[in-house]
Length: 111
Image 1 (tube, rainbow, N blue to C red):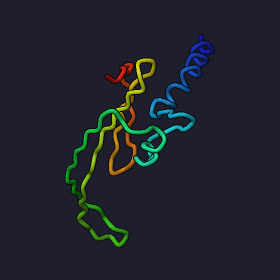
Image 2: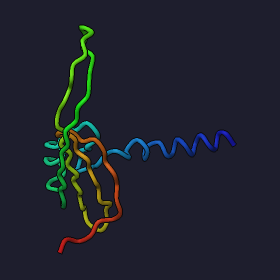
Image 3: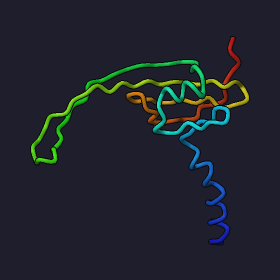
Image 4: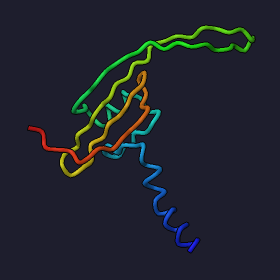
């Protein structure tokens, strides 16, 4: 029984490892890729949503002094529609880097 469970889990491993990735042609986009790489390999998305927020906090430097840290977090959500025979993909980009990839339902034909 334990052997059967182990074989089943090993069979699911490739799908779990590829859950946060998109294949565009022969290229694979994963978390940590840049938005430029995503656009180059996958083309223009069907939809783009942009937002930004101001973030702040405190950090301790190597010299032991507390410093205020602040910055703007720019978030873009790119949605790719690869057609009715493939899943649509939603990509969250934070400050120009791919942060999250979610598979959606099957795509649709563009009008």
